[in-house]
Structure formats: C-alpha cells, structure tokens
Amino acid sequence: MLSIVTIKEAEKWDNIVKSFEKYDVNYLSGYVRAFQLHGDGEPLLFYYDDGDSTKAMNVVLKRDIADAKPFKGKLPLNTWFDLSSPYGYGGFWIEGKGYEDVNNAYNSYCRDKGFVSEFVRFHLFSNYRPHFNGLSETLTHNIVRDLELPLDKMLMDFEHKVRKNIKKATKAGLEVEIDTSGKRIKDFLEIYYETMDRTNAKHNFFFSEEFFKVLNEMKGHYVYLHVLNEGTVISTELVLYGSENCYSFLGGTKRSYFHLRPNDFLKYQIIMWAKERGLKRFILGGGYGNDDGIFKYKKSFAPNGVHDFYIGKKILNQAKYDELVGIRIKEEDYNLNALFFPIYRA
Image 1 (cartoon, helix red, strand yellow):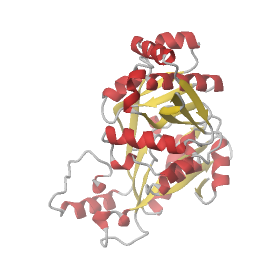
Image 2 (spheres, rainbow, N blue to C red; image 1 turned 30 degrees about the vertical axis):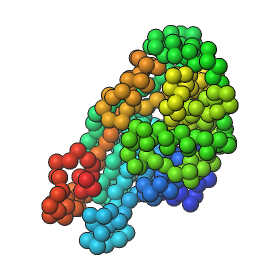
Image 3 (cartoon, one colour; image 1 turned 45 degrees about the vertical axis):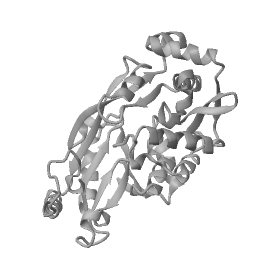
Image 4 (tube, helix red, strand yellow; image 1 turned 90 degrees about the horizontal axis):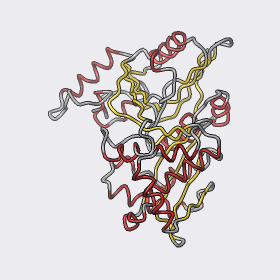
C-alpha cells in the first residue's frame, strides 16, 4: 500500500500528485528537483493507497547523514539517513480517514530503511498535522490573503498605507508585465540578488540561475510579474501556484525606486492576476524569523490573514539518534541546547 517514486520517474510522480483534488505546487517533481540541484538532498515521493478509502502522499528530501561534515569518516555511507520537507510547505497530504494506517506504514518503512529522523514544514491547509505522531510546534506566523472577497472589498481590507502606495505607483505610471516563460530571468536575477545582499539574507537563499530554470519547466505552475518604469524592470516576483493556492516565492525591488512604491503595486497586481485565474488564496509567507518588519509588511495586505506556521520533529530511531548526538558531544564547540532539529546536525 506504500510505494516510493524517485525523481527519475517525473511523469509518474506528477500524475500521482495531480490525482489529488487539492494538490499544491510544493509536491510537484519540478519543485523538489530544483532543491535537489541546490544541494538539499535526494527527492522522494511516498505514495500510500489502500485501494479503498484512503490515499496519501508525502514529498521529502532524503539526506545521507554520513555526508554531513561532522560525520565524515565516522559513519558508513548509504546506511543512515534523515528526511526533511523541501523549503516551503510539506508533510503528508491525505484524502480519506486512514491516518493511523498511513502513519504505521510510513514509520515502519522508514525504520526498516535506516531513517533516523524527519523534519516537517507543515502545509498551512493540510489535515495531517493533528495526526502527526511526532512533536509539532509553531514559533512563527504566515500571512494568507483570501482571494474570494470581491476586489473592491479586498482593497478596503488592505491597510490604509497600502492603498495610498498603490495610488502613488499608479499615478507614477508604473506598468506590470506578466511573464509565463521566464524570458526576463536576467532582470529578475539582478534584482533578486541585489535584494538578498541588501537584506543580508543567509547564503542558502542565493539560488542559482539553474535553480530557477528548473522551476521554469513547471509550465502552468509559475509566473513572473515585473513592474516596469519607462521600460525598466524595477520590481519583480516569482509566483508559484497549484490547484487553489499561489505563493509569493522569491523576488525583490531596486532600492533606487523605493519612492515610487513599486512593491505594493506589484503585490496588488499579483492579487488581481490570481483572482482572475480563480485561485482561492495568495500565501505571502512570513518574516525571516519572528514577526519582524517583513512579516508586518506582508500583514498589511491581509490584516486578518495571520496563520500559525507549524513544524514537525520526529525521531524514528531513538537509539541511533542518541548515538549521533554522542558523536557530536565530543566536539569542543558543540551546543547540545541549540534550537535545531535534528540536534545532531546543529
């Protein structure tokens, strides 16, 4: 009832994902293959089907623990592994009520195959978290813009400063270009990297051009929106979308054009595009850490759209987990109390 699909079986993978009525872009092979290219692990699709009332899927990145720097030469290769949801959202997506059967089959397989732990970034609208048989917790929030309100009411739901900035940008003659082919990827990357530098983003947020080109193979699941001033791209965003939700994925704005308020204008254009397409939610995400300035900016587009973002931590093999921690404890600068999971990778 539980089968594994590898990234080499992309067509089979995506057919399974799209067989779920409310599938999301985070589960598609192209999405996770981009993160494989980024060095985050080997993508796997777990698929459960009891042939009757329940089917489920989970997309993960498989990592060989022996490849991690602290364990080089201390563990045999291709023996002990851990799992993580790709960046964004994941966890099991389940249709039906057989949650316990899904968990039992999954945990049994993972233990038999040498998986030590799993880290989950729960999808905001999954029904799986209450049935997750590990520890789940929420430390941060995400913003979700409900797209089912009439546009005029949605506009009035924005904070006053957002409406004011949209008017200013419109008066300045800013224009939007919808790009479904990635033809302006050079413009996008220039602004994206500039923004990452300006905000002192972590190194792992500097995705390569090849990373984006892989995402651009997901036809019908991505779009770039660019704001132009006199023909020059000054603000840009890559939006990914599934059957119901679209996501503010990555992008940025040129600092020298901040005074024209292009980013507020861009978010509004994305909202209009998504609403016209019939999508139900625009997920803006959260901040870099706690509810920081970036989070508050996103909240200005949906003051009532605050959702808890949950992560999950599961130890599948306690004895091996403790053994790995024991190896790390011998290091002089190792911090056993670091807020990281799994702690043996801290």
